[in-house]
Length: 341
Image (cartoon, rainbow, N blue to C red; front, side, top):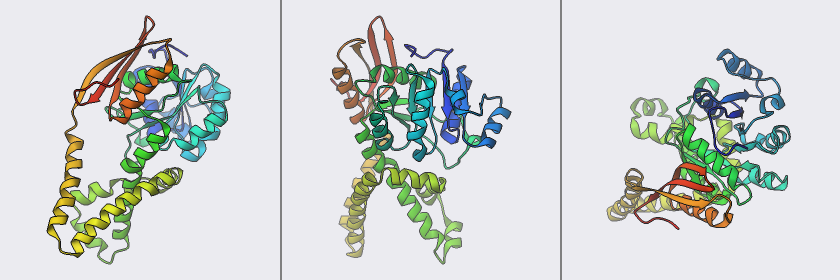
């Protein structure tokens, strides 16, 4: 494993739909030695037509790579991880882009791969799919979760530097458990709500009239309902317990608003929407203070790990990581003026 990413980085991307294709195109644009692989023969041919290297065999695509991104459908990740880990060698850093982390991480632990594998999840995407929809700028400014462990801290540093430098992403360190809980409310429940609204319109007798009048609120509220249905189902099922738990909280709030409406209680409706409005405005009004934090590169992992996880839990992120002269230096952005640690 290299100490930090360089222009001669050897990378592979396994699964080249929207996310994987965007990873592949960005690495190629940056000048990395990058190969792609996809189980679909026509996708491999499409990639070759675009001047990309697409071997027919997965083992050929990942051999002698410094880093491999696993970007296939969620149900395929465990077995793909096992195949890639055997073929790529111990020095290769393996990460994924799956929208849930619990299942694949448990598999990595069971197979003794958690030191080599760093779970990841870029919070980016569109309602389009496939390599044709890929965009090398997709991750600019996007949050990209990485789940560090004490055994895999060196690999986390490598990936954090790569994601910040090459993809210009905001790296958010989180535990696997925190990630799955947070994305249930931030991403997965919104897919359920969007699907419910769009689905209700689809079977309404006034469907055509609704679509004729639909403006920004309907388009914004149903955008992710355009995501391929299988991808959405895989995501929800792989995080089922957390999605159901967070959905119960959303339903409770909806029930409060519904009760206020049924009772003709304007004060309760206003109070409920003021609270919701404050959360929405806070999204645009977040203030992040830049800073730096240093750790000895060969020091005890626990202090560094605790700091990173507290940073992510507080809503902060990293935009840089350098390991030089025995010191790890993180460029951090922390909500508010008070530094962590």
